[in-house]
Image (cartoon, rainbow, N blue to C red):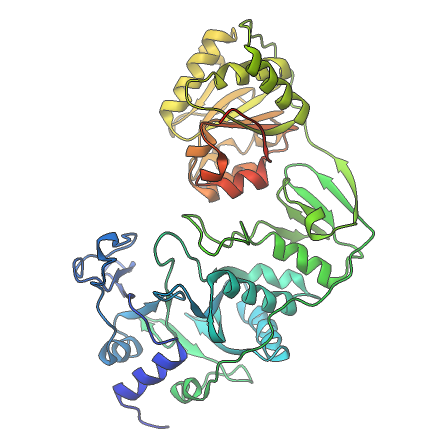
Length: 487
């Protein structure tokens, strides 16, 4: 085995991983076993920055990575993490992270797909085989959007006939947000037994991984998607999600549907706050589950959708709202009733609450109201009790750990455990309303709730256009379009 100097190793890593542009991160394990990382920032060098974005360092006060740092990474010190997008916003690689019970099986499919389309890649096993990564290298720098599409091209090729294997993919980089996104730890690290090693063509650990990196040549393969046949008709069922019957679907058609349900917004080169890949699909039992607002016709133009509606109308409630609506409020009320789902946008103080209360009274069904915070939840509880003839103890307010829903009329603060605490009643609500959806945060919690509800009527209100909301694309997928706007 060749004996490499620190400078030789640094030169090889710099070439393969796009020059190791600053900033970078250093990951280390604390005495308690928790892995923390800090960014290469002169101002907060001693801070374990688990979430700091170092906005004050944008002027260029990041330090440069050295050969000693890379050597320390390989020898089990602080592991080096780099960002796929450099300071020019270009990516020279993409990373597919895999988990599940057998990540190495999915890794083989992906590696074979790279070979079939002439893509340079590296296969990496992490820990004790519990996770794996596939590094895909590009011949030139690509925009984050193009890098993501290139990764999806590999996934589509790998799982076109065995799409179930795509479930092993837990994340895809780059993930570009307001800052640099999320870093990818370089291969060949060894932090307290959480080690990494590269695999050869026979899927055996490489004896000389540095030589493997040295011989790696980035490719300029064609990442465009092949043409696929469009079926004349598909069967689907609408419930909490839209369930598509996969029987008889051509593999490339199925892969295209899964690809379309991966991107929150595939036209954005930079994503704000939420991950760029959300994996909004599940495939099991011969059915592909996608969000109810997923536009199949855009991916399969000319295909007839035979739809079975299995949504629930919930339990009937005696609700009343006697206040009268103004001219524009009547117009908005009619638009919401006619649509059956959708979003109402109007400025603060314009009277959205009156419209929603009249809407809930008209529908008269078991209802769940999701709110962004406790203050909003209490305000809605007070207005419902004051204007709809409901006693306060009949309205479930789920804002703390001790609170529990009643399944008839509940108001909940959206949080990481909301879906778990509402699990018994989520499928039985006939109406779901998202209050102040422009202020909602926590895409994972929102998705978990909206994927479980089977309500026939789903509405939301916003004080500003939802395009400016943090969860804008989730709102589009799980609720629908804006049906009335006063903005």
